[in-house]
Image 1 (cartoon, helix red, strand yellow):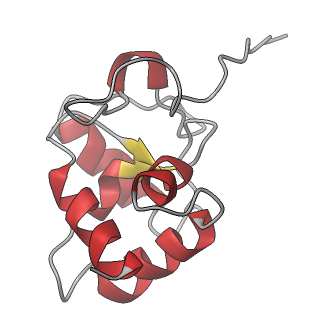
Image 2 (cartoon, rainbow, N blue to C red):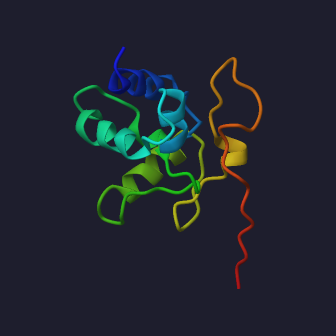
Length: 118
C-alpha cells in the first residue's frame, strides 16, 4: 500500500469527536517526516474521497487553515462532533487526540506546552 493510501485509510479511521495531527498521521503511515505530505493528501483528496478532513489539525493542537479559508468551517464541524476549539482554533490534544487501537503511551503525542495568557 502506498503512503497516500495509508494516510487516507488512517484519516477515515479517526472517530467522531477525536482529532489527529498531520505529524501523527505521517508517523503512523510510515514516514514521520512527511507531515506536509499528509496536508497535500488532504488538500487533493478530501472532497473526492469524502475524508473527514476537519479531524486533522497541527501538532500544536490548532486549526491550520486561515480565517476565511476554511478555519470557520473546520471549527464548526469539530464543535458539531463535540470537539471544542478556542478563539484561536486550538483543541485540547490531551482530551481529544485520537490514539489508534493497539498503540498506547505518549510516543505520538506532542509535548504539553503551557499557554500563558496575559
